[in-house]
Image (tube, rainbow, N blue to C red; front, side, top):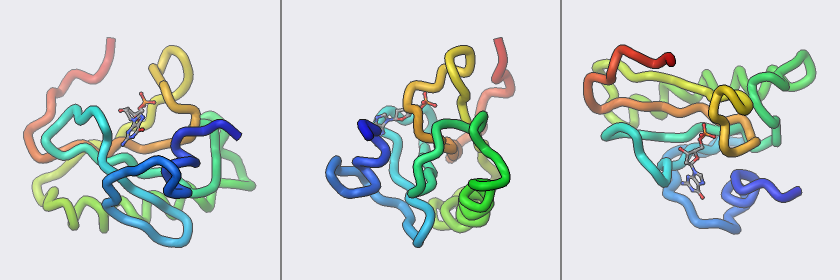
Length: 113
Ligand code: DGP
């Protein structure tokens, strides 16, 4: 499968690793939108949040168990934002579910259109 995040997880494309366990990989976003911008992905390929179901929800649970550890390791003591973009209108550019963890400064309140 031609998935850039699967290639990153396999180590075929270099990334700045921030966290890894048996199910989750986290790395620095190549185009940071905040002083701290991590991406958190499941090692198992899931196309987007719209594809979460009873079969794969455990992978998402593991992501959300990892995020507080990743945030702590990045010094995000004062809060942060977790975002996942879905599909065309959500401006999802990489079709492997990923959670943006943004912080390190007061973020803009406005997230909508
Ligand atoms: P989204 O627009 O929600 O699909 O976010 C995809 C993010 O992935 C975007 O912020 C840039 C990041 N990204 C894309 N390709 C690479 C890459 O090869 N390496 C890294 N570190 N980040 C990437």
